[in-house]
Amino acid sequence: MNIDQLRKLCLSFPAATEQIQWGDDLLFKVAGKMFAITPLEPARVWLSLKVTPENFAELTERPGIIPAPYLARAKWIALQSRDALSPAELATLLRSSYDLVVAKLPGKTRDAILRGNSRAPAKRRAPHKRNRRKSAAGRKCAN
Image 1 (cartoon, rainbow, N blue to C red):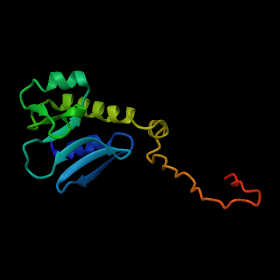
Image 2 (cartoon, rainbow, N blue to C red; image 1 turned 180 degrees about the vertical axis):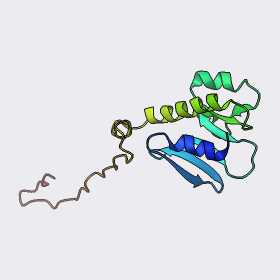
Image 3 (cartoon, one colour; image 1 turned 90 degrees about the vertical axis):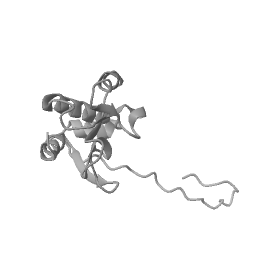
Image 4 (cartoon, helix red, strand yellow; image 1 turned 60 degrees about the horizontal axis):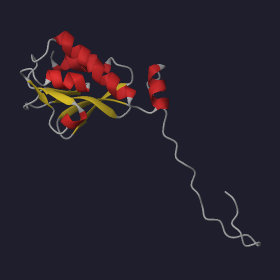
């Protein structure tokens, strides 16, 4: 799978976006949370993605697949080459990574994505509480 095929697949998931971050890394996100990372310049890993704890143990025993640098404690793997997995297996793992991230999103955001709303609801800020002056009776006014 090349970078164009990877982009096409990842961006086909509901509400998925891409963003260049940390200089030359292309991140795929859903609701601002990463589910896959690939460097745009040559690097020691080709792609990093989130997996289940069970898959993490199994996959990191395979040649060409290592615990992802900086993200291994969150059960991310890194593929050292494009041929570490078959295209079909990689597509399945990318969808699983996306699904794992969506499952951890707040309920309203997750529901909006599952309903097909590409725009997740915006976070609402709590109203600003002001200190009120004491009333003539010497007690504070209720907000």
